[in-house]
Every structure is written in structure tokens, then in C-alpha cells.
Image (cartoon, rainbow, N blue to C red; front, top):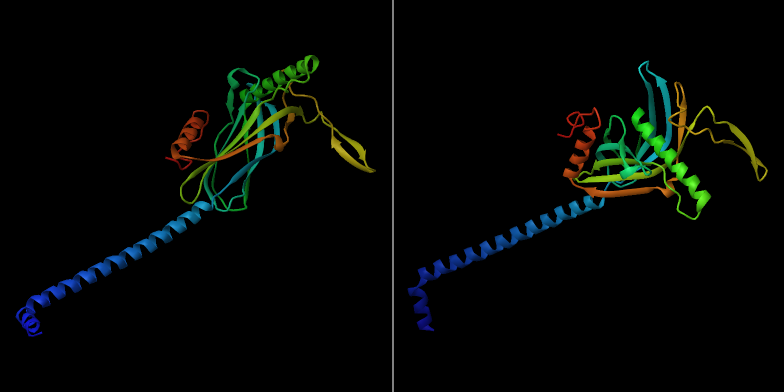
Amino acid sequence: MSVFLSFMEENANLIGVVSSLCMLLVTAIYAIITWWQAWYTKRTLVESIKQNKEDRQPFIVPEINAVNGVAFDTSSYLRIQFSFNYKLINVGDSAAVTLYTFLYARMESQAEHKLVYAHLIPNYNHSLTVGAEISSSLHFETSEFRDIVEDLEICQAKNMKRIETDSTITPYRGPIIILRTLYRNMLDQWFESVLEQELLDVEYSSKRSQKEVEVDGKKYKIKTRGKMVTNKTVKDKDSFEGGMINPCYSKLIRRMVDEDYVRNILNDSKKHSDSSLDYLGFD
């Protein structure tokens, strides 16, 4: 015991230094553990918030409401405008921002499925909140309208021949109207919603009339089919309506895309439009 006490007395200063170093080391380890716990808690919270935001995404559903057109003489040529009224509905659980909407028609009966562009695309909207909707329209000009009508004429001729020869063959399809919307979420992730819906016919509005039919004792007024529009018969002051296939036979695609994809779509549309990317807010 005396030896131990003697050792302690002789090395008191050294023991004090070692003890201080041990306390300093323990304090440093405790500080590191405390910092790591705080960092991990913060990281977990940030990841949780980010995951919650990623789980809450906008989902834009485009719908075509009405199709109508008019022809008028401009003194130099017969101008035709063929308009598609549409609405965009946000059925998701987060707001959508920076919405670009495009309209095309894909010719199903012509070589290489020619694609024609609507005039002055894209339409632009700043935002669309959850549950809200936007209504607007885009239109095709004269040359695009004539392409569409020609494709319908070819399709109808093929279907008539199909009925006469072999009605079991799948019907030929008319022009496919493509309504595309690009939009971002609050995390700057880009999405695309694309509606593809077949155009069945284009009929003169003035040639349509109403007739009364009776079903189960109740009388209803329905519109009769009008005369089909052709490139040879359309003239000044004509108005016409387009008939779309039932939406249940159409196709809706929604997917995530990257910024390069969006930029390429915008640059492509700029070739067929008077719109400016600077004006649209996309450098």
C-alpha cells in the first residue's frame, strides 16, 4: 500500500495530465456522437419530407371537348381553321407548374404516318392547382385540315372496301389526334401526359338536323348525321363539326421525362410555330 501511495505521490503531475487527456478524449467522443445523432436526425427528417413530396405528384388528364371548324374567303385563298376545344384537369395531389400543351394529328392512312402540327403551339399556363381545370383551344390551319380530311377520305374508302370483301378484318383507323401536355412538379421534375384519340368524321354543321325518337315512352331529340366534308366540296362560310371516338377507346399516357426531352419538344414545335421559347419562359 505504501508503495502505491509513494508511486502516486512521485507521479502526481503525470497522472493529472493523463486524467485530463482522458477527460478531453471522452468529451470529444461525446461531442462527435452528439453531432452525428443531430446530423442523422436532420437527414432523416429531410429525406422524410422529400419522400412525402415525391409521393405527392401532379397528374394532368387532357380531354377534348368539342371539334369545330369554319371556312372563309380571304380574297387570296380559302382559309380554314379547324379548332379543338380541350381542358386539362389536375387529378393528382400536388400542383403542376409550367404547363405546355401541344396538338398534333397523325395520319393513319397515309405513308409513314405523317404528323401535322397545330398552329401557334404550344399553349402555356403558369400553374394548375389540385382539382382545378383549364379550358382552352388549339387549331389547325388550311393545309393541315386538308391533310386530315384526305386521311379520313382514304380511311372511309378502305373501310367500305373492307365491308364489301371481308368484314372480319379490323377496321381501318382515321387520323389520330394527339394532345400532349408537359408540366413540372414542385421539385422541378418534368412529366408528360399524352392523349391519343381517333377522329371519326367531319360533317357540315348546317346539314345536320334534329329528329325525335321515342325510347320506353320517353321522347328524345337527337342530331342526325350531316353531310361529310371533303376537300372538293368545302367553300366560303361553311362550318363543320368533328366527331371523336369514345374516350374509352382512346389512349392516355403519363410518364416522367427529363429536361432535355422537354427542350427537344419545344425546339421541335418552334420549327412549326411563331412562338418563342424566350416568351414561353424556357431559355
